[in-house]
Amino acid sequence: MRIQLALDRLNKRRCFQLVEATKEYVDWIEIGTGVIKEYGMEIIREMKEHYPEKVLVADMKTCDAGEHEAKQAFEAGADITTVMAFSANQTITAMLQEARASEKQLMVDLLGVSDQKRIEELAQLGVEWMSLHFGKDMQQQGEGLTEAAFSAMKGLSGVSVAVAGGIAEETLPRIMLHKPETVIVGSAITKAEHPGVVARRMKEVIEDYEVHH
Ligand SMILES: O=C([C@H](O)CO)[C@H](O)[C@H](O)COP(=O)(O)O
Image (cartoon, rainbow, N blue to C red; front, side):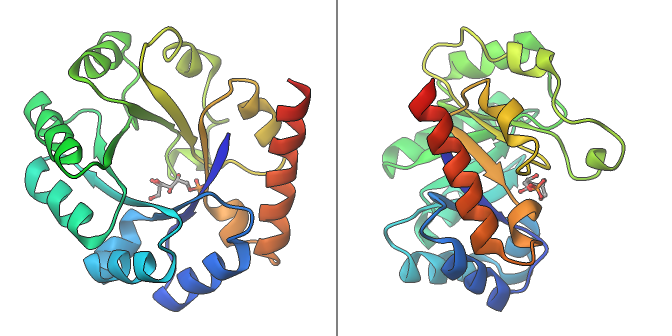
């Protein structure tokens, strides 16, 4: 299980400070959608130049013009780009082709999509990464991802699972029970008083769990 640090609602300087403070404990770095809207491909390029050893995720949340947006992200240095699960199959297929041609990867964001048929259809299209996502705005009221959401991912062959949405030190143990390949953590680290300490503790919790399960 790896940690993907999600950099959202931050300025560029703070993004770099946070990566510097947490880099020993986080595996992947995500440039969040809002940060991409603010700084464009430039911040993807700069982050990859500074941290070439890290897998860099561009959270483009593409929903149309898939080929163009995938190219944009990959050419800037992203290793993984994201597309929304409700997008047309043509969009997803075009992005998958682009990812394969560039030897990169595509992650489908399941925000707002829980239909088992759609999830199976995505797997049949050849999607290798799906992220179960409890949205920022939904976090104000809800309790997070349900057991049913996790169940929908069981038995899909060739699909790796990432989980996102308000994951914090307290909720990490429940998430780990489902053994996702990647845990996406934003605010719990980026808004912490000591981001490096929280990232280290979350990494330790994961490592400890993996030793014992
Ligand atoms: O994708 C995200 C969200 O839609 C905001 O753009 C976040 O990266 C993801 O939810 C992780 O952030 P936290 O919920 O703050 O952990």
